[in-house]
Image (cartoon, rainbow, N blue to C red; front, side, top):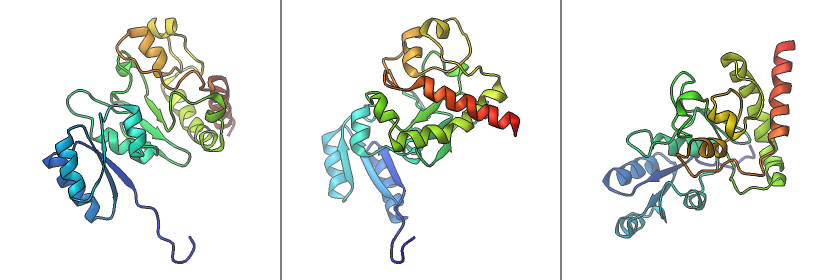
Length: 221
């Protein structure tokens, strides 16, 4: 670190600017964290701004709202999930990943609430990206570093739980076959969500080659 530089504080996103949300925001701010509040109610949003907080008005389940709020890192996604583990709508994943971090949110033997229809049957992974990304964007320096980081981790998961390293079609997901798929395939198979991540541009063939290569290296090593 360059002398005089200060590390960037971890960002916390709080969905809801009511009494509990504001109290949590005050505590985190006092401890030196960067806090953003997402609130739909304009009056609550105004009160939070009056206290000096950055506020994004909108639905905390909306991807565009979360992007505006800056929820782009594995740590930030994990923190957001931590606030959505109670009554529906639930949201969680076993791990959250970005280009330099893998954050475990849910133990592998427990259920993560990520893909309705397959929650009880899958290991759920949240990548720092957007469903609308093109293949080129999924293969840029940031995303490629993320895919390369998580591939060995998922190779070990696949080995432990005997998951074949292959992509599943919608029909195969519906039939309960084992392998890798996205939220899009689960949504189409069971009709319980409209989510379509990781999107049409996700480089499945390249990614699964990384996972397969990591599994081979682990076996040989």
